[in-house]
Length: 293
Image 1 (tube, one colour):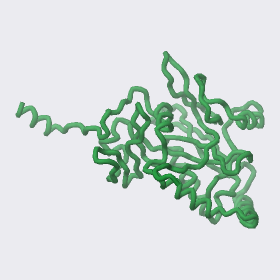
Image 2 (cartoon, helix red, strand yellow; image 1 turned 30 degrees about the vertical axis):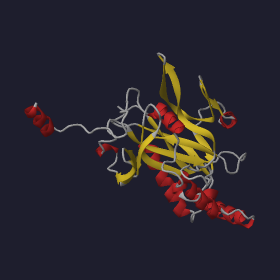
Image 3 (tube, rainbow, N blue to C red; image 1 turned 45 degrees about the horizontal axis):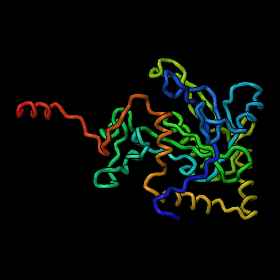
Image 4 (cartoon, rainbow, N blue to C red; image 1 turned 60 degrees about the vertical axis):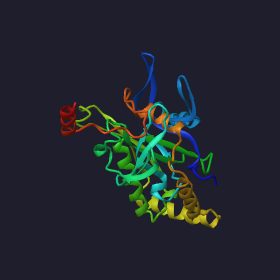
């Protein structure tokens, strides 16, 4: 295995709740109130739709696509949902810092350092909305590729918090059989004072419609036993997937970083060319400089 290269789950498509639109000559993100399933090919008009997108829309008979039947590739919740606080350099998409709220890995003039991670609200390095929570949920849609995944990327606290909770709850209730539970992604909406009562949308993970908790757990257990009897080693898959993700300093490439910056970072937020942004001066420091000037 090449050292320094993150071996991430094979991605064959994307799931989003927004799209890029062109306004006044600029490409800007626009939120949506439904799912869109796309390929990994992007043109001037946007991402090309995946054939599964049309197939699922036919099932809802012209209504908006607000639920997607899925299964998970792994039993470990933290392998299905990867989430960290992340700071991408805007122009290059290069990841500069990534942390979990306690410890971060940061590129500095001295190289890659491990430093305390106070979270974006308290971190001068990632101030001005440059550091965001960045989550990637890997799911399987359809039966075409047994190991291929569709990825849902988000910087929204609501989606990350909800998905993390659901994954841990389902993992506990099913006896660890996450990979064989019949699940679906569901789009939910709510309004808050911060959204000025306008609806905001986030992604949830639930059991499929019409399947009770008892039936889902029984199905997952029996399916796990059947797969094991056929020689499918889910535990080994989880182990090798974790090792692949830990094979590099950062799990994402500059190409992915550019896509995240374009889709989720507000227009006009520009980072410094330096690896380490300079913290703002305090009042006492400004007064001291004024006296010596």
